[in-house]
Amino acid sequence: MIISPLVSVIMNCYNSSKYLREAIDSVYAQTYENWEIVFWDNASMDNSAEIALSYDAKLRYFRGEETVPLGMARNKAIEQANGKFIAFLDCDDIWLPRKLEVQLPLFKDPNVGLVYSDTIFFNEKGRSKRLYSNKYASTGYCFRELLSEYCLSLETVIIRRAALEGQTQWFDPRFNLIEEADLFIRIAYNWKVSMLPEPLSKWRIHGSSGTWTKMYEFYGETMLMLDKYAGLFPDFEQSYSGEIQRVKINNTLRHSAALWQNGQGYEARKQLSNLAYRNINGFFLYFLSFLPPHHIVPILRRLRGDITPT
Image (cartoon, rainbow, N blue to C red; front, side, top):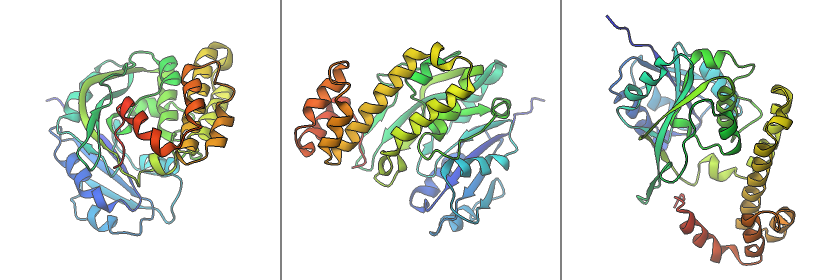
């Protein structure tokens, strides 16, 4: 008799009642049946607890005494996990029914520490887009690729417990926006990464998501992550100088775009001034920053094919 390994599904919740039942139901609808939900309530003040506690014993409910940073809350949930594999689902996202069934076989390779898949970004107006419709999917020993162009979506990821336990740190509690990118990139330093090209989840885009409400924090957190890697990996700055430079350029472009979209054109131009004549995107954004953002931002979003909250 083949025993299917237990998968611990980490769900971190803070005032997430609006979409919560749909997210939980998508786990209960899985064709792979040996799973548990580790539900960590980060001291919510809405009726999230009532919803979570309405399910059976496969959902294990825990509540923190106070609200803590997301990275710390994810660690607290993992401490309660019993599974050989760890998966993640935020309370506003959705799994498709075959997700666990088709991803877990990729762990038959003992060197694979992380498996992910394509996903569908969607908003409340019905617009949707596959994440990897025009992106390259990094696989194998791909630390270098993920460092320079990180593009994993949390709700698609499953990690081997052994890969997690081999880390000197799980989620970095200093991070609120890149805590999962930091951890998954670190796992890729020593472990192979595998990917299924079919979409196995749906990532909901809405205005109250931290990705949108705290986007200014990306810049500082990314620079802190690079500083951490310099002390963690041997010869990091020398061996990965090209990737580090690319991360810094992309980080400056994203931060400048955030400033500009918020009407802070002068601050955006200051950020872009050093890139304007060294990077074509920096050059383009520098001159666009003189224009009113409410005229140009919708055009840029359409050109990139972005799915926005509204």
